[in-house]
Length: 164
Image (cartoon, rainbow, N blue to C red; front, side):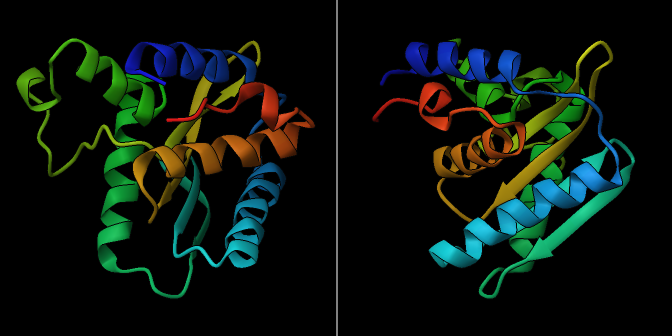
């Protein structure tokens, strides 16, 4: 798939993966779902679920480093700023031959790499993010989408990105 096809699919994911609420229980269920996937697949990832300004779930798998923690923070900042997935923002910038730096956003605080996805509450809007770091950016993004699909009872095959 090219950038334009991925952009369309990411926009669909962002429209479709809406939650009834974001509370401590949902954060726990989403975070533990991601952690279970990581354990089953032997993934070295950091997982962060948050309402903006309030961490709700955090886990670091064996083999991760402080760099993963920083990637989580920077990618989550992109979701908070743009109310879009970090992968979607990165693809959009790539399609326009643009960058966060050119927009005046310091790379020390923002990363438009895949892995952070907005937590959207139907009727309310974006209230937080779920972020994974440790895999290739497209894989980070897709792991989050897969977990959200599972949480919401959606068929992941209908929403996943196509082959690269």
